[in-house]
Image 1 (cartoon, rainbow, N blue to C red):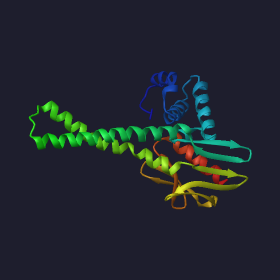
Image 2: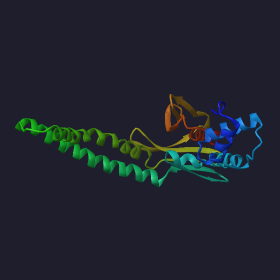
Image 3: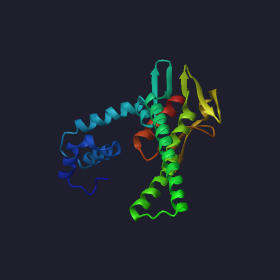
Image 4: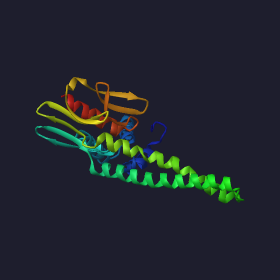
Length: 222
C-alpha cells in the first residue's frame, strides 16, 4: 500500500495515522519497520493495540447492529437499541416516502388522462414524485431486519451455546453445537452461520468487521 512512498511521505502519514483505516495503519507500520525508518512508532503501535483489544472484546459488533456482554461465565450477543430504533425509523420514513410515491403516481396518471399541458420542469417533478415509490420500497429492508432480529440472542454460558432467532416466522431458541458454527464468504459478505442458517453478516471487505466476526466465532467454538 505504501511501497511507492518516500520515507518523508511515510513520516507525514504517520503524523496523521489516527485518520487511517485499521488496515492502512497495519500496512504503514509494516512498511516503516521494513525500511527501518528512524521514527517514533509508539503512537501508531498504541492505536493498533487498542483496536486489537476492542476487536478481542467484540466491541465492533456495534458496527453491524449488535453488542456483546462478556463475563467470566461466557458472553451474550443481542441487537443494540440503536439498531432497533434505526430500523423502526427507516420503516416509518419508508412508509411516508412510499405514500408520497403513490400520490405521485396517481397524480401523474391523472395528468395524462386529463391531457394537461405541462412544461418540462413540471413533468420532471411529477415523474420524480412518482419515482418516490421505489425509494420508499428500499426503506422497507428495515422491516425485514426488525422482524428477523426482534428478540435475537446468541448466548454462550459455561460452554453451552444457545441461539434465539426467528427461523421462518416463529421465534425459536435452539441449543447449538459449536462445531456447526462456521464462517462463510460470498463475494464481499462474511457470514456467521449455524449449519446452513445465517446468524448475521458483516462486510468482508472491512478488516475490523471481519476480524470481529472471526473472534466471535472463535469465542463460541472455544
